[in-house]
Image (tube, rainbow, N blue to C red):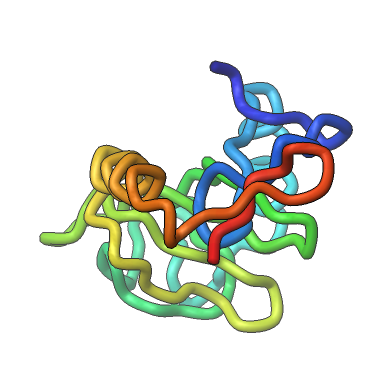
Length: 134
């Protein structure tokens, strides 16, 4: 699968609670766009980063890669900064910065999706066959 493009979100949000996987071309565009606002307190000119993986910060860190998006502009990113949580999935919002998720990586995120889909109490199908997380 190559993600879900802007115009094709009718199936619902496969990554809870309201995220869509990004197509590869969109990942590149999102990264370039967000990198224009690199966190000057974290991202050094030499490519070094002052914060470690999993650490909350405000501005966009160029050592994170967007993998999912939601219509309000928030993204899920893989955190590639150094540290014991390297590879974890973080949420980034322009107004709030980074926040933790429970996912140690993309494999954990996808395993969580599978577990939730197996539990009918966690999902519902609404108008037009759209998947929603409850």
